[in-house]
Image (cartoon, rainbow, N blue to C red; front, side, top):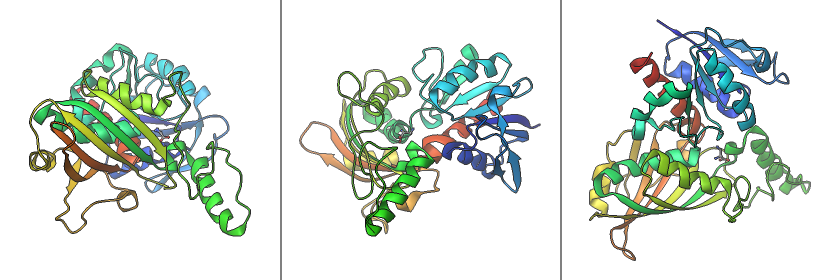
Length: 336
Ligand code: 2RA
């Protein structure tokens, strides 16, 4: 039996990736509907070999829709998701709006698939922030092994996380630098071409950015509320793929050999060793891949039970669309 699935935000980077991921993974669909704002209604998007005409989200009746995969803006989700849930659909939402709601599970299947059961409370499941997802996938087997106490993470995040206009801005500025007519920043606060920007999302009262705050609170909700996280999030001129250098202090004894053994074969992880042919991986090498890639696992001798590692993932796939489709797969297999 197949399901009726709606994709909200179908014209955006993540929405398109959601449609592609559904077909690639042969998700059991009978009917797929592409939804977006009235501005995008009537435009066409690909779904495998088919083309879907985008319908107006505001006018769509969710009755009879089983699952909604959603990635519009947070304000749009706040309005439409309860309406869709009231009509009987389960909404898997990629925006930040519901993530910290105690009645909404925040799920990374490799880490806390059990939490999906709580979808019954509001009919909504939240997909975490991209940089959080890849970090908690890598931390999970290490936490099981030696209990993570504190994490200091520095991210190197690609522009696709900020949407299609951000990708265009990087492209046009990069070309413009050589033509002497680089456009002024519009999506980002500073020039992104040939530069790095230590701000993702807005600043909060304590001078942390919202992206950094998300990494702190989401890690606690998904993995363990006792873990302390110090996050530093930086935008880099890369189109697809987020990277993070992660420093971890553990409660119990651990060394690099034990950590690599735990990471090797852990769900959703590819471990690349210095001894292997690739030595380590970069975002450009893993765009389009499903797994979280971990390399440069080494001891940090400046603290007791300390480790460093480098972690890279495709932010549009595991960081967004794939994680949402994996949740939907568990939902239909175990709960529907
Ligand atoms: C970014 N974390 O990379 C955001 C996307 N969710 O901007």
